Length: 266
Image 1 (cartoon, rainbow, N blue to C red):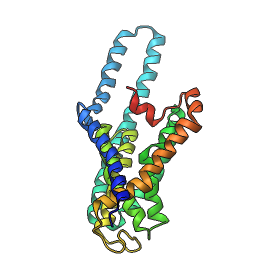
Image 2 (cartoon, one colour; image 1 turned 135 degrees about the vertical axis):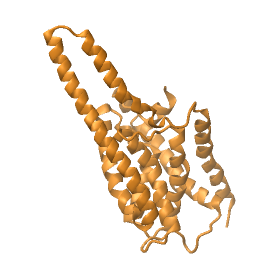
Image 3 (cartoon, rainbow, N blue to C red; image 1 turned 180 degrees about the vertical axis):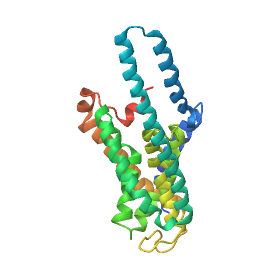
Image 4 (tube, helix red, strand yellow; image 1 turned 90 degrees about the vertical axis):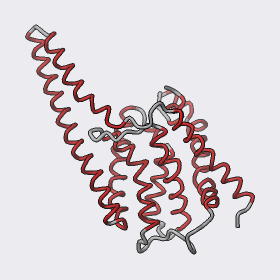
């Protein structure tokens, strides 16, 4: 039964959707896409210009070292590019040919990519960005997949956040499918792969997983209310208490970047 409390929570749940829609519409362009691949050619041009300007033997030696470094970076870019393209191809194939097993493809990538991101962000003082909404959404997804498979409620909450704010953030933050950049590929994965996971489980009956209880077809507003009640409100309250109350001075003193800093500063 749809109560007044459910209606209020559904209205609250519409707020992040409206905010993300506004962010998308405010962008000058939606997807940066492959335009940044031009950086490869810029490296070549800057290298040629620098070579012509150096004259001394010491500078030439330094130039050779820089040239080797650029070649190493270019080789790494090529390797990451190939892996990125293969990843997209394999992902599409598994989602279409073996959707019941897609979660097995999703899980190790989620664990490895988040671990790599935590390490790289730790070096840059950005590790508190992992308190972001999308990381917690991925966490509840893993909890459902490997610990609470019988919980239809947890799946439905995971479904709502994955197909709502998390997916739309790709447009809101102009995330790009840049194959030679593991950072960009990680961001795209964290925001789109949960959507694919929920789609494969919802529309392909998978033994051991409960997605509806007792049956599918609940009022969408009830689903929205549940997502707000059991995930969005607890996350935003916990985030506020942690980032602004408990660790506020500590984060400012150490110049650690947070999600609030990223969305309020340019």
